[in-house]
Image (tube, rainbow, N blue to C red; front, side):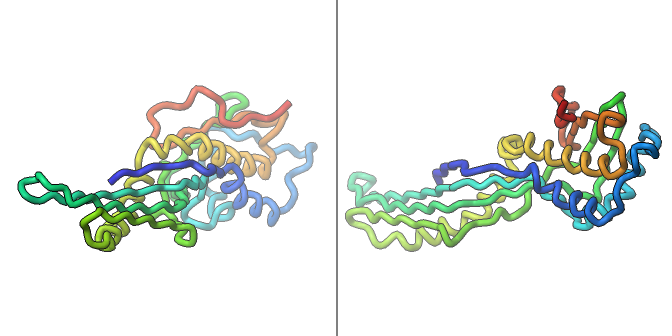
Length: 231
């Protein structure tokens, strides 16, 4: 089977923020500047964050990014007779369909937050694909081409259709595809944590000004800052 992909868009920076923003809007305003809260430390920041998670994000999965692509699947079947001397033609079938790949983290999995000067280092749960990917069947296109001395390729088309969902599940879990959205997801997590810090009165010039995010499936902390306070 031959497949092709065309990326349409990747989004996500605002997805994780929606849950935290709703949480902020439900709560009382943050403390006045004259009553600044005690600054978070390594000893209390993780416990404070995980305690707030059920209110910030009541769902089990926090969606971080959506990647929409057009996937093209092609299958061919050649028929030869008389010891392969006579070619009776090749049937070709093709399906093109937009697919939405969604990526999330399991909110109830382990989190760890650390403080380092004016920076918060977030060790977030593993980045995962939502399975199966969403197929936009209303935009699905089929193409059939029959060989010069062949029957209709309808059976070949049916076989190709059966392969689509298992193939897309494999695509969604491919590390290369995860890496394609990793930075978008990383920024979404940083926004999520930033909104919580704002609510707790811990974000800004008198608090923390940088957030760095590492997912559990990553070996080392990225060198670059994920999110920082604009001057």
